[in-house]
Length: 371
Image 1 (cartoon, helix red, strand yellow):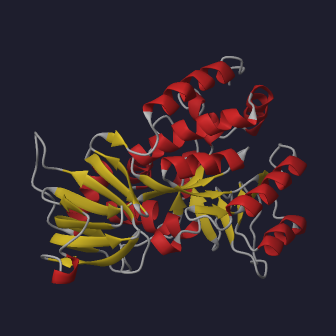
Image 2 (spheres, one colour; image 1 turned 60 degrees about the vertical axis):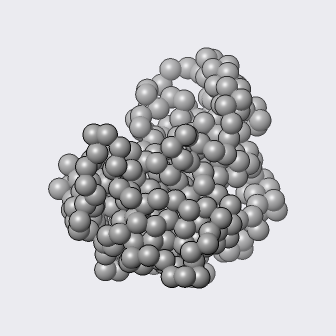
Image 3 (tube, one colour; image 1 turned 60 degrees about the horizontal axis):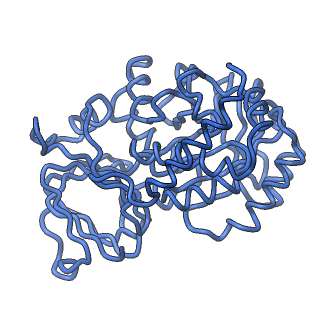
């Protein structure tokens, strides 16, 4: 798809000053937002290849997950936290090709819940990259070092990712470490010019290493550095922090937002900004973190028009509350140049892939010890 125009839609704009546009338009060309605003689109944008009605719809920049472990996705109803020992046990019975199907299932569920970008910290990330491109979701892939897995294998995976995927649109490369931020890992991130994610650091990191973009994930001590929280550590969240799914039954950022609002009495608008713009920026997708001219499209459209139906919100605060606490139906997801999801379901990966994936998952996880 090359030229897409959505007219008559309500726009939620989460810029430095959040704004709400009622009855507006957005025009996308070659995966880039060329124009948006109130009223009808200007004459030069009136002849798209695809025209979508925005009547009764609410348009938002897509959600982002700042920490996701796909290997544990089939166990999401049993597991409440990331257990690297369990990941190692799963690997004993999983072949590299199996990971493609696990990733396809989990990434498809992320898209169906409105997630357009995700940081994935897992194994066999080369297969995750393939699945992500097939599903249509943007990913940042961070092999985990010093996390109980084989560091040498993870370094080989990192080099494989850099050689195959560094220039591919919608795939970003990073590295993750568990616990302390050691100089040898900083050197790896600096050498390859990639972000470094520090998972569960026990001590405060007082200084940012030169030449490296460092993001903390669930730090035990509050920090002024970029920080992402998920799971039980949501209790430490602040308004300038991002959010992750980790492992949870829903695999939905909207459920994380509801939990955050309940747990921290967070303002719905602040929570929504965290689960979209801030997290996207922290996982290397600054170019699609906002609805703005020149940004890569990363869009979710909610449908409020179908029965029982309800008039769309008329202010930024009511829109934020509707999205975070309501049960609005996601109708369309547009990522880059593709309509990835519409009312008929996922448009990228077909039924046969999912059928095969479910069979593969059943084979692999039937031999996995219970958590």
